[in-house]
Image 1 (cartoon, rainbow, N blue to C red):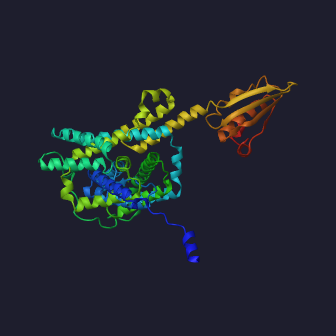
Image 2 (image 1 turned 45 degrees about the vertical axis):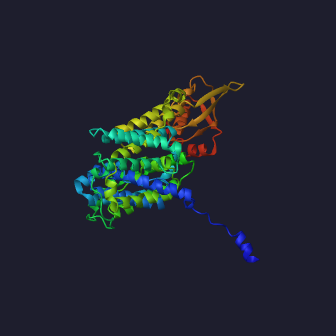
Image 3 (image 1 turned 45 degrees about the horizontal axis):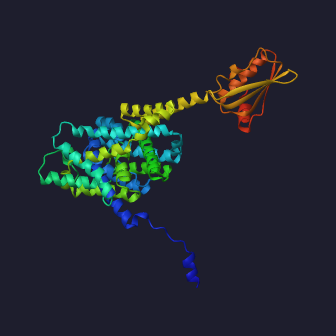
Length: 499
C-alpha cells in the first residue's frame, strides 16, 4: 500500500517537449535549414575578418553547440557574425590569427564577468522604438547583404530566385509538415545539377574544411604587452556580442510569447566564445537572420534545433562537402530575402501608424535605423537610439514640474507648492518660479507632491533659499518624503557654498 501511495505522490518528471514526434521533426528540419544557411554566411564573415573559411565555419559549429546548452534563449542561433568579424579584422590583419583567437577568448571572459555584474538588467532601459528600429535595420541589412549575389551573375540566377521565393510563399499555404526553405533549397539544387546549369554555388564562396576542429591554445606570447594589445578588441567583442545577443533574445521573446533568461544568455555567450577560441574559431554572437529562419520560417522552439544546426553544419562541411558545394547561392539568397521581408516591421512605417505615433518615438526609430545603416554596426545604432530617447525624455519631463502659490490670510506668509520630479533637467527652471522681491517676510515651500532625485535639485533649492536670505526673508522647506529628505539633508548648504 505504501509503495502505491509513494508512486502516486512522487512528482512526475516533465518530458522535454522535443521528444514529441511532431516537435522533434520540426526541430530537426529547422536545424538542417539553418545549417545550410550558415555555411555561406560563415565563409563570408571569415573573408571579412581576413582569415581562412575554416575559422568561421568552426566558430559557427562551436558557438551553436555550446549556446544550445548554456544559453538562456531556446531556439536562438549563435554563430560567427559580421559584427564580430569587423571588430577583429584589423587585429588579424596586423598581428595574425593567434592574436585574434586570444582576443576572442578574453572577450568571452569579459562577457561572463559582465553577466555576473548584472549587465542583462540594462535591457529594461531600451525603449520599444529602439527595438523597432533595431528590427527594421536588421531587415534592411539582411536584404542588402544579398544584393552582391544578384549583381553580375548569369541571368538564370533570377528565375531560380523567383522559383525559390514562390515555393516559400506558396508551400506553407498547402502544408507546414516540411520547412519551405528546405524544400526550396533541395528543388533548386536538383534543378541546377540535373540541368547542368552554371550558376554561383556554395562551393564558389571558399574551400570547405575536411577535418574536425582541434583544441589548442592561441599562439601568442603570454605577456602584458599582448594583453594590452588585445584588450580593446576583446572589449569590443564582448560589448557588441552581448548587445546583439540580448536584443535578438528580446525579439524572439516577443515572437514566441515566452520569456528568456537574459543573465544566463549573457554568460552563455561568454562561455561559447571561450570554447570557440580554444577550438580556433573567430568568435560570434546571436544571428538575427538565422534565428528568424529557425523561429519564424521553420517554427522551431527548443534548444534541439540550435544544437543540431551546429552538428549538421559540421557534418555537411566535413563529410558532405561535395554535396553542399553544389547548392546554388540563388536558393540561400531567396531564403534570406524571405527572412528580411518577414523581419521588417511593416506596421511601424504604415502612414496610419506614423500619423498616430508621437514625433519623438518616430525620431528615435529613424535615428536607430540611420545609425545602423551608416555604420553597419547594430550596437552603435542601439546606443544612438537610446541616447536620442533619453534626450527626448529629458526634454519632455523637464517641463513637468509645476509650482503654484497661495498667500495666507494675514498676508505674512507665501506658501509655494511644488509638483513633479526634480532632477538635473527639470530643476533648472525652478529658481525662476518664485517672486523674491514681492513675497512677504516668510516663505514656505511645500514638497508634498515632489521628489528630489539629485544634487542639481538640492542646488536649486539652495539657490532659492539664498536669494530670499539676501532680501532678509526666511524660507522653510516642508513635507519632503523620506528619500528626498535624506539627500537634501546630506547636501543642502554644501554645494558651492550654497549658491
